[in-house]
Structures are given as structure tokens and as C-alpha cells.
Length: 241
Picture (cartoon, rainbow, N blue to C red):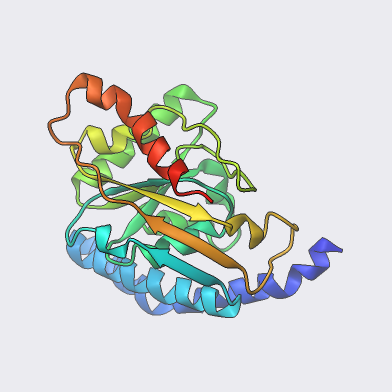
């Protein structure tokens, strides 16, 4: 029954890909020329058009707070909790100043229709069960950040599928500390109700999204870096209802 009830939402998500077509060619052209600034601009345009279409199609109500905490220039690392699949849409909506790729689980690369798009926006796929592969993915992410691209990371490592946030896994914030870029913590409330709560895509869900003040990482001592994971986790957890 749930499969049947997800057919129409699935068709809507498939149609939303049409919002990506006008910009994708420009992204590839800019990438081929090596013009990273132009590429980031086109990624933002594509992502913004797509996420607004999805938000409209499913009537997602977003209470966004703290937009003023996003700096005018990047790159940055956004770090927050992960309640559901809808978080990708919400992050693109909230962080529309920057191109934002994701540090994503490798199974998303195989997602029908969208897997390639997630890669195209400069995401990095990570195989968390393989320590060596995970380290390689983190280093790949650091290289992207050093080239000016921004990344979103969910340090829980997986979706909570409810309002209970798991402890952050250590190590992913090296994405920010190694190149010395700011971390911007964020908290998402109720996004699991978009899909995970009932196993079907639900329209009209009200979600909260808090962007917390950024944390500078350049020049931190070894002790401060060691305490950073817990500091960011506490900030994110503090924004939960």
C-alpha cells in the first residue's frame, strides 16, 4: 500500500528534475573551462530552482531562523542533525548563498535519477563502514573546500528518522579544521515527518530550521580542535525542541 501511495510523489520528484536542465549544461561548461566561480554560481541557480519546486509541490512550511549568520563569502562547512531525506531540500533552501555539496553515504550515488545530480553539485560519497575509504572521502572533501566549494555534513552519520538526535561521530569536522574554514552549525526540527514518520511522502509538514552563529577554526589549538565535535554537537542539540 505504501508503494502505491508514493507513486504520485515519486512522479512529482521526477518532474522536479526539469528545473535542473537549464543550468546543468552551464555547470558542465564552466567545469570544463576550469572556471570554479562560474560553476558554483550555476550550481546555486539549479539547486535553488529545484528545491523551491519541491517545497511548493509538497507544501513544506519552513520556519527559518538565523539566515543572518551565513557569511557573504565562503567556503564554509555546514554541520547539523539529520532527521530525514527532506533535509537535503531544506539545506539547499536555507544555504542559498553558496553552492553546497554534501558529505553523503555512498548508497545515495545509486539513487535513481538523483544520484548523479548529488555528485554534480560537488558532493563526496563516503563508505562509513570502511575506515580507509572514509578517510579518502574526507581528504577529497578537504580538497574541494580548498578549491572554494562548501559542504554540508551530518555528523550523526545517518538519519535519525525521529526527533531524537544521536551522538556525533568524530572526525568529519576535519573538513573544516584542516583547511581552516568556518563551521556553521544548524538544527532541523520535524523533517522526519515529511517521509520517515509514515513511510509515505506527506504534504503540508511544518519544519523548523535554525542556522547558528559560525565558529571560526583557523588558528585553533590542538585541545580546541579536539573539543570541537562536542561543542558543535551541543549547539545543534540545543536547537531541538
